[in-house]
Length: 161
Image (tube, rainbow, N blue to C red; front, top):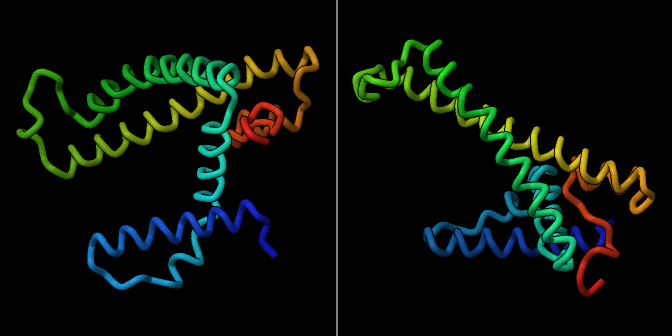
């Protein structure tokens, strides 16, 4: 039996799929709407949890995430040049003069490094910031893990709950 939030997520997923299918004039794929990856549910819950935060907690969350993203990008940027040079791509030669497969591999690897770096540093800074709050007793360890790794905030921090 599904909970109320999972049913809501199912209805949202089905509604978005119907909109996409009607825009592309394809038949509505019923089985694809019912079965979807568990990770998408976690992502949707995290987005909804952050979107419903009270202004003070949303501001805290945005600042911690912003600092984490800045540090993540600052670490990833020099790695891009290292990856490109290891594939033999020079920064002063036009990119169209290289093999398309090499360029695709470099862009794919750089994109993955960027995503990994952003997530790692956002989680690290959230762990530091909210870990201090956990030590002071404002949140417990379960809430710390939910905030840092799942992006799900406590109910008392959210509007209308």
